[in-house]
Image (cartoon, rainbow, N blue to C red; front, side, top):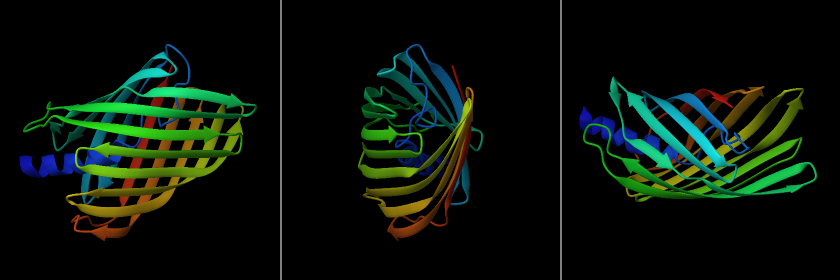
Length: 216
């Protein structure tokens, strides 16, 4: 069972590494902080994540991600996203570099490291995110792009996701819709990705993720 949990944690870590709390979108101010919880279901297994963020400056922040499955806590992931923001009228964008380390906090846990390079931009009507990452022997690319629908103190995003991963354990490509909604300081995200290509990864079925976060 522990070997199975360790294997599942590897796949979960590879998937979660492409995204940062809270929902890739907040906070965008100095002294901001937040927590989110997410439920991932894939390959007939469910993993619950508790994740958080704190920003000393909007360009320098710290994150944590902690998985929980079958009554056991997995390996803690700590990250330091470093961002460079730019604004051009109604458009805002940022480049980010995120070094991360995995601590062996779970049973039979392992040390590991990763690095992510990401770009995102947003206008009142369009949002896009591109995240290229390396995690151990795994390399992946995650793309989110789609439409934004701003409201008064709220907003909704209808996006499409494409996720690609290659490793010694095999390769896979998944794609599907993403729905994001925020109102004041609460955010909700739901996504489904179907498996469209798989080679030697022993992966079956789709991927479903739903999460809720709060930010201050």
